Length: 233
Image 1 (tube, rainbow, N blue to C red):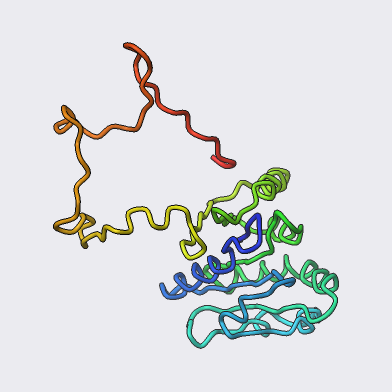
Image 2 (cartoon, rainbow, N blue to C red):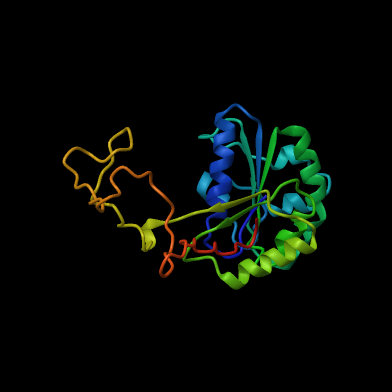
């Protein structure tokens, strides 16, 4: 299950990308779009389904899945709500356990995209059913309060995310986007010939690189700056 604390953190793009990589590796993959408030997977992959089909209990999962032309091996369920969102959420909630159980039998991997946990509780219905959760965050976009709220909700469910995916987007003005942009690395990762080399202080030319520390006064040993706490270990 891919989810996030806040909107626009990149969870949907991450779920699609992960699904495409698995499908390209010849795995059978089913991708569910359960963000019925803002369904976006169908638009990106040019597929779609009708929620009225999902509301009929005699409709089988095989009838709801669509395989994108551009991604053989990947089957998708994506349907947006055209009317009452609460009714759509009720339909999805009632059929979710059955759909995921059946999907496990049909595919090697089942990927679920949900709404942001930090804003709405829809994702919690899936969280109690899935095996793993990947939490997607984006510096400069993820709200700290919503991140803390997400942690508290998942802790109550006894669900620690299997992975924390940190997405950076230089296109929106990352403060570090231009850092080192004037030096283009060669294929081996070294700066190109002729690039300026940072000066080395006297007496340090033969020393091995060390971690950055803060020196004390007099003859005190230097002390390292303490690491900042992070919500998940």
